[in-house]
Length: 136
Image (cartoon, rainbow, N blue to C red; front, side, top):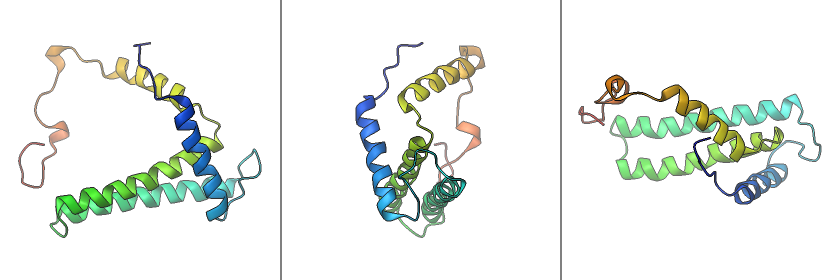
């Protein structure tokens, strides 16, 4: 392992637990059982996709000039937290050890994307440009 120290598990697990408890109070899902139903997983996956789409829509509005960058970033923060909440509920359903899973995935990605200096691609990522047309 690369020596990465994930966020304190207790803090993240507390957030995940609170999201789960709130979900049981606010949404049409049953959080009282250890095994999630297909309907519960489907609800959370669709909600996650919906919130991700809302985040994308905020940025689209900025790119087309309907809102300012500051407005977009403020709204984006709200939508990203909604995405995080649904992810937390899915983590809970799967009984994931998120810190450990992240550390393992980070190690995998580090090996996968480790590039030597001669293979490094400079410039913009995937040719993406900012709204002004210049490099990011």
